[in-house]
Image (cartoon, rainbow, N blue to C red; front, side):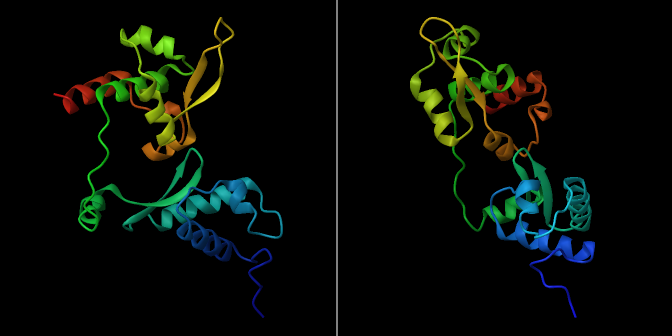
Length: 188
């Protein structure tokens, strides 16, 4: 008789099938601790990571890939197929102003920073709307307050920012010089 799915599957292939089903069924990244909740018996986090890496290898030659992001694991379409999928839903991507992109870059590379810090680096005042756009997108958040007069908010990037860029951590951000070149090309 086959092991019921609500208990720990007897073999690793069955565990991988459960993981695959969960990851295909969700749009949000799932953390290892989220994935462990599916099983009634304990599965060690390192065992689960090993199985996730095996699952990633299984999908290595497919149009979708299993990736590890800052907030967990998820499936996504490989970049080479995005052009085709874009034709199904031809929406124009949101364009951000140079001021918004510069502010985001300063926060990402110098965090945590205050609006005053951003203004010092950019050399111009930062409109409240600029930070608000980044907060509404879920890319930056106030993570505390500087212990100075006025107690200005300290801004830092979020896990959503990393997830949207396909990164696991800030250490995977490109060197600042590359980002400056990209900004100059985009705003040529």
